[in-house]
Image (cartoon, rainbow, N blue to C red; front, side, top):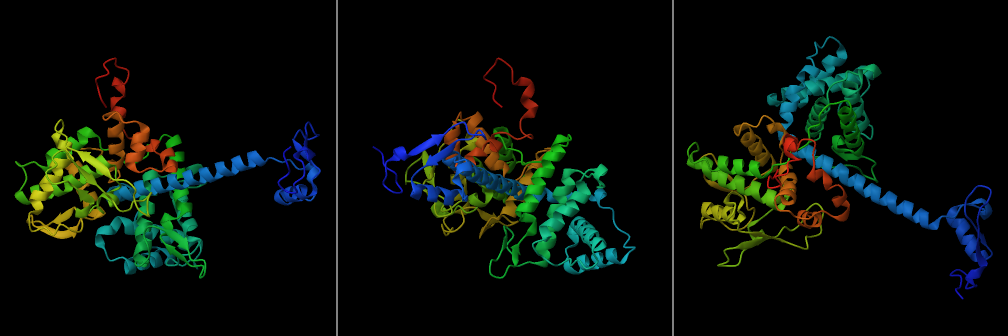
Length: 468
């Protein structure tokens, strides 16, 4: 006979009462020890009227934990995409200027806001950002003359969302009803504002010090602001406004980027040398499905090639977002004679020839090239590569160039493996370094409202040789 784990008595003393007045399932526990523990667990003095649902409670808690993890991953993915479009933000700001008419500084609040903005920001190229910042400061000073424009507190994220709501909320709610792009521009301008007044703060987090209760980082990266922005985007989408997420760079796009980077007819030798480096970075990010900061962390010793081996080489990365304590696997990239434009071995050989014997063979793999074509022993930055991609997409004549950001390589590489490589989902998840929780949101890489709609007219064709 089975025994009670609490007191050692026979488990037959546990019986169940079905069909009680409230329709629930209730235990009739004669074991006093077990009964006391269950009462304590459930937080009730009288056990008779309490529904006991151990299995369902555990299941609900596990579901809550999983939902929380997925929610956190969605947030991280959103912030990643926002960061990847940083180099296009000037375009969005310029497009939003009509939503922020230049104030006449007729009242003291507006004059005070203008003076603070001018005192803190000396970069004249950020005129659009400054206009949005002045509007933000004026809005809050008119609501509360004692509001401190330079204060950063627990309420700052709420101040940000209140202002964006005022600009982009529904007109019938007393707001201005501006587009979602105005909200994106506002968030970017306020990020610039808080980075300016607190230059030593982290730009990737928003946290509170438990001991001092002070807040550190950027309030525009807070959970409150991110959740608000995602909700606003969905609201605008329901009303028919098209969102602007990072568009995938597909195989044809990579072919065009290759041809542009190696255009010997219209390029100088210095530009061709710069083309070798940036296309290699593009290609590695695309083939390995790396975040751009990860591909720029590749070093010379990240490449493992057996002397004399002409078919493949291995790539190792120390850490990445989903494996901060170290990555347990590498990647093997193979020669691609069937499509030389995306052959990783050719890209690596071009880098080796460019760097020459004088290279130190240590440090960053992708090095800066100066205007005369000289190799500098300094690694590329996210900003340099992001601006280069924007310039390249414009040079190629893409009217939608502003939809391509550095995250487009990871998104496009994922779709390429699925559509052209015929990889299974689990292969993509393993190759791209997605954890089980992250894989739940991986569908966002397979599909975006901005991807492939131009091919829909051919989706139902019986000629299955067509690839998209």
